[in-house]
Amino acid sequence: MSVRRADPYRDTDVIDARAPRANQTVVALLSLATLLTGSPLFVALQALQLWIGLRFGRRFCLACVVYFAVIQPRIGEGPIEDSRPPRFANLVGAIFLTASTLAYLAGYALVGAALAAIVAGLAALAATTGLCVGCEMYRFSARLRGIRPGPIARIDLAELGAAPRGEIVVQFTHPLCTDCRKLEDELRSQGREVVTVDVAKRPELARKYGVALVPTAVAVGPGGVVTARLA
Picture 1: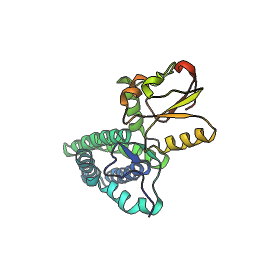
Picture 2 (picture 1 turned 60 degrees about the vertical axis):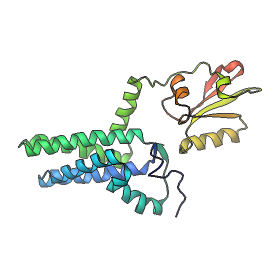
Picture 3 (picture 1 turned 180 degrees about the vertical axis):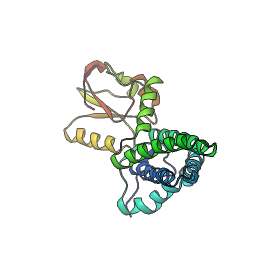
Picture 4 (picture 1 turned 180 degrees about the horizontal axis):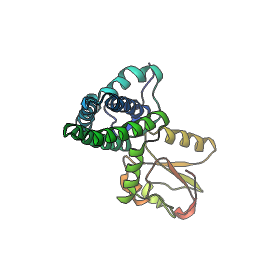
């Protein structure tokens, strides 16, 4: 059995990137079952499962439990990513599936089928390609809430506890971020001095410098002047 870096039930701020795709596969299949049979039972059950998972956590999400208990131990842990976008996508899916169920029960089968078809299509897209529309909606809404990625002109090295002799790299990271680890290893292999900022522990710095995604890395010269954006 491969060693997990992120515990699926404790490290809930991150998630194995393959887990949401497994969940989206189940959502797509059950939504398709409703379209093929005309019965709202399948979308109702999936809506209920999503709401329970959102409210009580991954231990109560059947697709999640199957993935982490059966599939992940056999194929290994996938890339680790922020869990907020897929969680938001689940919320959007739960709303659409609930609306589909209510439409069927109210006698508006065509409306219910249309909503189920939207969920089935988007879930299938996410499961097969990794393109999660709900996740992209979350990232867009983050910008509206003020988490805006943009150019970083200067960094206050004193608040990072850094006193470099020359150019350094400041990397905004998360301890469980797969891409962050790869980037840091790559930068250090190039002989660069890297100062990391854990956004989980220093969220105020992420907001101050407009860091919406990790890894974000910039080259910093004397006086904290940013000379290049590396990632």
